[in-house]
Amino acid sequence: MPRLHVNVDHVATLRQARREPFPDPVLWALAAEKAGAEGITCHLRMDRRHIQDADVLALKRRIRTRLNFELSLDPEIVAFALRLAPDAVCIVPENRQEVTTEGGLDVLGSHARVFDAVTRLARKGCEVSLFIDPDEEQVEASAEVGAQFIELHTGRYAQSRGVSRTRELRRLERAAELAHTIGLRVNAGHGLDYENVGPIAALPHVEELNIGFSIVARSVFTGVEESVSTMARLVRGRNRVSARRAR
Ligand code: PXP
Image 1 (cartoon, protein in one colour):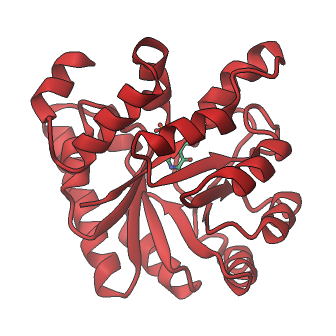
Image 2 (tube, rainbow, N blue to C red):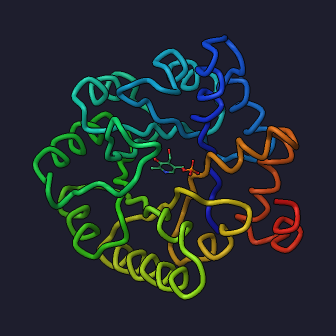
């Protein structure tokens, strides 16, 4: 049964739309923790389109669970992460034009840079994860560069339907099995919502799910307490049917 980590980036997206001090992603994170989030995730993008440096520092200071900091290999952001020394980091690819993180990190193609960042962040005591597509070569490369964890990108699974979804689920399952066999620990996330999370929560070896957009979006209607606690129940394998109706 995986743990639910809630990504608060899109609370900041709403705030940045008007450059107001509200809604505050830190207060929202504290409410999410009360509702059952077992960790808080945020992504400090190079373009600062949502989360700002001060948000990350305040999250580190104020949350009671664990902070998972998502970052690109940009040297300025890596230096920020080294100073922050959060509980966990997840290295993601980043491209200025994308709406969200579109694909997994090419660990194979940027072996030396990833190795360097993983080594420095691990020395700071952070758990280091690499956000990758469920490809065998990327899983193997992740072990070679010394990562402790991989986070499997579930975006293609979330976007597909019918047989393609079943195929994507099998790819994720095979990648999780391979990772486990070669000593990597496994997380997953991206595009997960109240309707599609069940099969991902049931995958073997998955320890943590990182979910943001669907939870923040639902909270606009139902509040943080309901949106987080309903997702937490789904991740734990309960209430599957009622949540599908409520989406
Ligand atoms: N995991 C990683 C590594 C991500 O980059 C994101 C998006 O910021 C997520 C999980 C969460 O994705 P979503 O907001 O679609 O739930």
